[in-house]
Length: 259
Image (cartoon, rainbow, N blue to C red; front, top):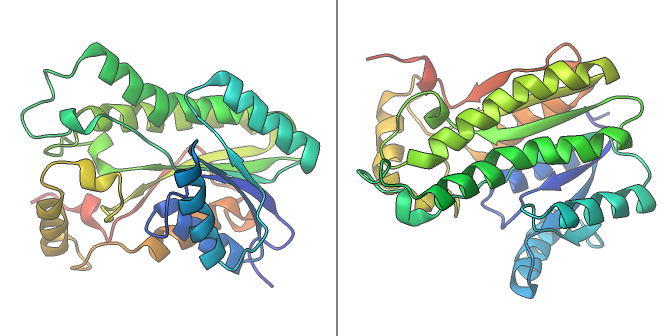
């Protein structure tokens, strides 16, 4: 018996087998869930995503191209979900974007308006937009989880506008939880420690962040994808039925340390 036996849901954000979304899907599958997937537009992105999904042991996945920055694309994907499977039990939001030019130490104040707006749109607003579209597909309740980072709470060198976007994501998590709770839909986020993903490598000085966390975190190591994947599976399962509106830190204890 797995935590997620009989549950089905959408996982957004599998870029390759190093992404947090991949680790979450891996844990969900192990716990008995059926995972459906989206990928970024383009044949290259589809091949990369499909290869990762195949490594999970899923040979014929439900897979849809989706540009999360387009309302029309979101409508198309969720309409297809409704047509193909009818209902879902969970949604994983593991996407974010900011122009790497502005993810460098000393470049926060200079962030252009367009880059700022795009970061908030893709990294935070899309959680709200997907929740809105997932809501009617969860008539008996469900659970949502998004990925955040400690840079939403404290200034992290080079994280810059992404930190502001993640702060908005965490606030959106609480407001979504307050609104969707009447339908027994739980909404949480995981503040995962730094992981060597494509997105993380865009942050200037990322290697130094990894070294610093390993030195200072109580567990004296960096988090693994599996650590976050298992936490997400828990939050999406009925074992977390009383948990909503929360930001769960899965960072080897780093966020608990002052000096």
